[in-house]
Length: 128
Length: 151
Image (tube, chains in turn brown, blue):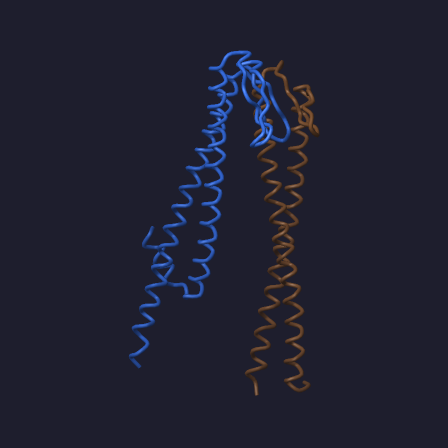
């Protein structure tokens, strides 16, 4: 093996590089979690809207706010629109879940790598 | 149950205890925040229900001042005392009779109260956990201080 101080330096550089990558991965993960939270709240809002729409009589007057104007909507159409949106949000939630899973495992891997490098650096520093 | 908790806490080292304490404090803050938010929202629903009450008591054609901004008003008159337009979310508005609207706001209010109760229970659980951890930490510090001077 080459001299230990050179190896220690190398390990240190590697550690720094990995630490930066770990930070980045963490940032990505927290962004993913934020997106997921937003999807959940959208889902809840749409669920409560469809619940209200389903309670209405067939001849109820429903309006949708489009820009600054309230536009009259057919109740059946409104229901189908909201249901479709709920479907879409559900799919997005599933997608976001699988994305989060992979991000989490990536994070764990990076963390393990960091700990390994740190230990190595420590043993190099303690060595003769 | 509580006894088991204490034992498992004693098995942790002080650093882990500190970490746990930090996490719990974060959780508690979050739950307290959502509790506050729920409280505010249910207040809004309650106010809307009361506003409808006020409307039903007024007469058709009665003059009123409409707020355009917080400080600018225009005069108008009550067009109908038993028809209101309710914002049910995501840009949808529904015409309801005042009874329907009252029922809507009551249901929303009750639902929020229910959720607040749930959050409150979780919050209480977390707070008692935090207390236990704080106690375990204090015990640890004390026993460390007692050991220090002897050898």
